[in-house]
Length: 557
Image 1 (tube, rainbow, N blue to C red):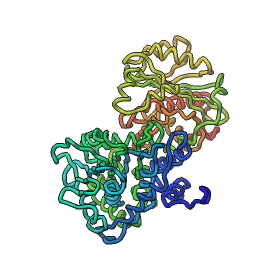
Image 2: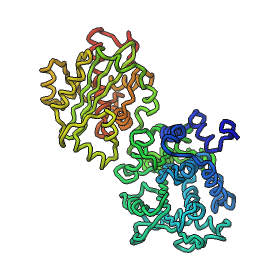
Image 3: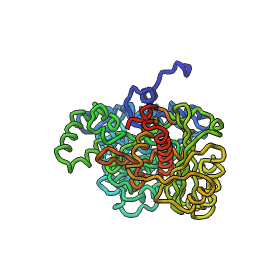
Image 4: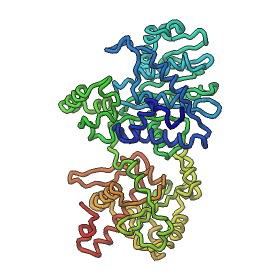
């Protein structure tokens, strides 16, 4: 059968429906699906292949297993489309040598969506059907009781199926004598972990881990295996300073294309904002099993209880809607931002009028300068970034941010040493603006330096720009509006994209908004500089016309 006429597998149909919008999905699920399609297009160039037969084999194996509790006890597993898509990716993608591409999988989803059953199914497949010699499968958690949840489900499944003819369950292990394989629960209170040689590790409820110790131990023990699998499955948690949130952050960066990791598959089901927890139409974003393993009535009861008992809100947001409780709402969705990649050739901007926004860093961090152009009722953003070399290396090590790639591609300029070289930045800025008709540049009045004086002495107009609500609210609102309506263009700069994704906005009682550097998850200097540049343009227009915004139809403040 030709590829064109080949019937779509349920996993492929799920991806198609997410991409088309037929299935309501959050940003991260849409990004994961988009990545899947991009990978299919570039597979040959990257030395990958997709083994449909192997993917279907894994799905079929898991669907031959049986539920052991609840209303479906005794009936065979029926993987929901989203679960099939997960298994499809893990076991379908191969390197040219036939080994699995994905060695690490991160699944984050609200409770009661079948995550433990899926983990148990994958664990048994890795023990019995993966073909590994002397497989070692571990169900890992911080404490013994948690580690045994997935393990106990696996034991019950073995006893309820024909697997009992091949696998022997004991109190703390499942033994596969024919292949010399075992599955065991593993926790930090189990004692020493010396001698581990895992072929598969299931890390359950990673959010409860106080550090990355368990992950690191298992990862370091993977070395003797050709294609090990780390399967992390968790709900959201409360600790954004913990190991799980840090790993989640890297997953999101990979999905957005900020970082590259071809061995990592990530799938995050969550609400796009906290406000959606009160909207039943949005609940499927974090609960893809809605109507299957949990009902709308159940979620409605949880929301009602939380409204009557404020102390229950944290748990409901986290466990039922998979929201990290101290995470702010997504300000501007990544897909909206990427729709604004401009069609205006950068060369055509030479000689054009522009306004600048300069966010000078402290001595050891990133500095941002953004030029804003206005032509034909559209705006173009042209950002520039600088970072000290030693600080860059530190951030690569600690935060896993792909600065080296950004530098190689010309998006970030490195200054020598461990502190920012302001003379270097000043010379670079003067070289940059020489190509344009620069009107004025805004800068943070609380972070002025000799650099500003030097730039003014070179003939640049530099105006201080307040960082409070009074100065920042109008341009911040207008920036948001321009992105959502497609009136602002950018050139796909990945640094600016990363900063936008990290931006948290604060709102005062009067409804004014501004970016909040303290609460934002990463650096946002480029976005702040962009907003200041827009504010500088707005100020210039206001000086020309008493009521410019209404006449131009640009501002609805």
